[in-house]
Amino acid sequence: MSSKPVKTSAKKPAKPAKAAKPAKPKHAKPVLKKVQKPKAVEKKIHKPEPKKEHKHAHAPAHKPEIKEHKPKASAQKPAHHEAHKLESASHKPKAVKAAAAPAAHVHKAEEEPKGKKPKIVLPECKIILGFAGMPVSAKARTIQETVVYAHNMGLEALEIQLTHGTEIEDDEAQSIKVLAEQAGVHVTVHAPYYTSLAADEQTVKSSIETIQNSMIYAHKIGAEILVFHLGFFMKSSRAEAMKMALKNVHKIAKFRDSKKIKILLGVENSGDDEILGDLDEVIQICQEIEGAVPVTDLAHYHARTNGALKEIADFEALIEKLKPLKLKNYYMHMSGVIHKNGKEINHVPIKKSDLNYAAFAEFLLKKGIDVTLISDSPILEYDAVTMRTQMNFIREKLTGIAVEEVKPAAFGSKK
Image (cartoon, helix red, strand yellow):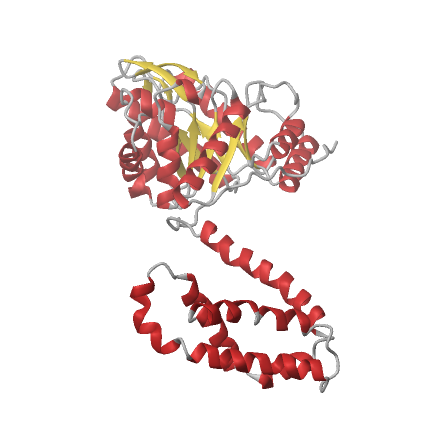
């Protein structure tokens, strides 16, 4: 007998809710009967309540417990609430629809933050990616076209390599400068490679003039850094060669200051022990000359150290070496490299090298280091995109938040 009241209490509270919708009059007799029925349910509910102590005797009945709670909720809201529902029955369907849509929306809003909550919070950093020289895709043949091409690939930096001379007309330079600013591409300049500041007198003189002319070129187009090498040394010892190179970099810096040119002198480390400028020598020059900064070629450093850049700790040690310079941001070249006995053999794509770019990317993100990374691999712009893709993948792995690459709007070339 105790089980039947439970079944009636489970079915009948549902019927008044459905029948209440068409009942517009407040005092209609059918409505009063329906209001009184829950009262009868209340009496039936109170009867089995003392038997709650015997719940263990009716072990299989978990559902009756749930059903008993539902009438209790309706019992706590007797005729007053039923009357109120009947009074607003004509308006309730609209109210239910209005509440249903936000409820689903709120549910999504509650779920999304759980998925977006980062595993770790990375420090803020600015990582600018680009490439050096003309793109290998042959889609650009002028510097202006290359600037636009870099922008359209979502890259923000371009290192212009002066392989065809150091002269430029003012109008041409101005067009490059304006275009780069509009496209949001940071331009730098690499002086011709065949220079030496520690060779014979004639070679040194010619090299200084070449670097100075490159500086004027860089200044005209609004470049931020002029990159150059210290070069080969033949007849003197390494220590003597360093003294000569340091003296000549001083001359270049004085020329810059005399012309009131605001540009950084970027001294690049070499990938061969027969070329002056290992990382320690570059740091020494940058410490002694104001406005000189290291251009850290990671492939060169990797080769000179017999493949040292493989773990996060290796990159941390590299940055520790540069800390005395108190750099706010770093300018670096990135490429894969084949090396042997502390010498660079040749550059290769990043994926074909034992230089661990993924570890470097993770290190940069975790430490929050500002850096401009220039791809100078054989597949210039494609490796720049590879660096960006891997950087985003590492960021997503660390934070647990998906990173969507947004393709920039195409930028029309300007003549």
